[in-house]
Image (cartoon, rainbow, N blue to C red):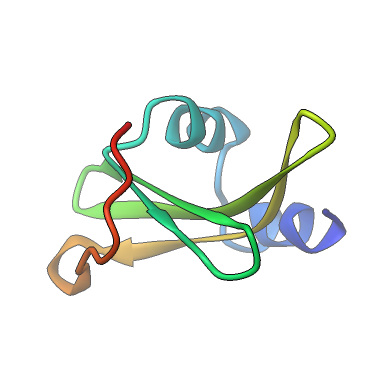
Length: 79
């Protein structure tokens, strides 16, 4: 989405890291309104990506960094 593209630039997140997070997450949760939440550790932080599948494609809604110290996982989905 346009919002996600803006967040990539503002938060200085490389698209390759987003792809790694979705394709090979360390953790995945069920989100609201048919979304999935993907987490991937990169150093001292996790990248959190919220996305949904639309017509067979992954639509990224938003993304941001979370400190590994602050992370808690909820509803686990096996990856």
